[in-house]
Length: 184
Image (cartoon, rainbow, N blue to C red; front, top):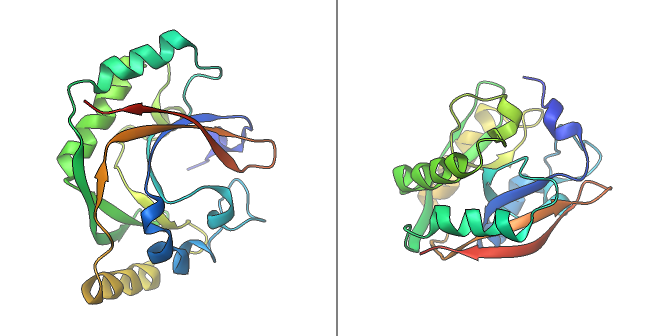
């Protein structure tokens, strides 16, 4: 896994942002670093989120935003929870969004609307929706076990997902929201 797409600057993304989980996930995200920006903790780069599509179009036009609105117009707002933790083979630890099939369906609707923007630059053929809590260099079984214990003791907050955020990365690697598209 190269993460070559992530080494570029000025990316745009469509995200399910869940700042309500920051207090819950910062224990892991504040000590984890992005593989593309190893000098900065995840908490300083971007809020907790589930990536819908990255990289997205470089300069989203009104037509691109209309295409996104159309892609998610039939998906009604829904409750989103994160009841379990897991990890990818590279060690990245994550929380699993539920209802998983609904989230995956949302992602595939967006992918279909933007075939010119393969998710993660085409690096991962089968995208697994997730909220990263620890990157590949700091993740692993210990973080997953700690997260599972934390989830068992106190579940992560459930949120009402009503919109997708539109985000842009700045030259320092920090992400900033520049818009949103409602579901439904």
